[in-house]
Figure (cartoon, rainbow, N blue to C red):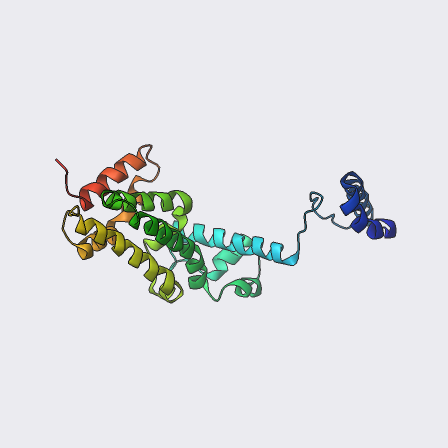
Length: 233
């Protein structure tokens, strides 16, 4: 970098954004002449520090790992498969995750935490909205994080220690809403425990069945309602 550019950039960045952009162009041109690879342009005021770059890399590992797990299974993929896709070393991977099981947990945890929050809101509503609220919770999670739900459907036992708290909180929130529906007499089987089992075994698999269908929402609601709620007719 030219000395003038190096000494002036920090001042120009805060005083004159147009001048700052011109300096970036000068720096890029200088590096091209010396064979150096220019850095990507950034907007005035944007700082790409180590923490931001690290977070982007961590997110890339999560996205790639989630896709591979959903396409195959957690048992079938290895850390090396993820590394090959992202193009980083094992050392870099282990800077963020202990193993592939912890990576999977980091994908699933936000879905469980978000679901528990939705169900908590449902529990403070009218009792007739309990079952519809549970169904809408799964639909919302599918829309916002279907990768996590795909992984949950075929979760490996080794992942559970990393999910202990969020899994427990989600299950507790779900049973709270089911208890409200039970008290209102709206559960088809009149049982929180049996309804919980029905949801555990059908809620996510049914979303996968209807994935890509143009009427997924309607079909899923009708199917889950028939499984969980008494007919009002």
